[in-house]
Picture (cartoon, rainbow over the protein chains, first blue to last red):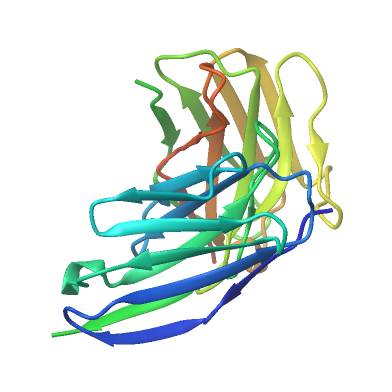
Length: 111
Length: 116
């Protein structure tokens, strides 16, 4: 089955700097790669996603890149703000199949 | 659109008792729902796939006789934790795929279960 690896597990950045989180996946049939932000005790919140027919997607300060050949995808957050501090999860699926999550990255943005 | 609710949002029960968690799709029909479990400071792990009108599919290592899943209608799936023990204390979250053909899944708000 699918296996998703996520790095780093913790990340501290100064406010205004960029943050990058990387994930790799094992199943070449996976075609949907969402990123979630989760605050303590709450449901995961979708922040951006990308499908396998696209190499890059951007939404304001957030961007995701996908390299299908290498089977890895990355989340980029620019101009980080304290409210970006949370746990971020990457995931992979084949359409409407269950999501397989990475282990998460705890991002701390230091003011 | 595409709202999923869960009830209760939190529950405390005594060891040995059973707890039922409901997951509802409020504005769409969900023939499939997924149940995840999240222990503190860990990731979400799939427990089972709930299918309307048929038996649930459980992931390896998840006891189907302990975690009873019923998907009796197109908008409701229930997870019953039977004979709960403290090690079952966790955050349980359901999700449902949308119906538009897009792969996005919609998560319920989760249920915090504490077994004393």
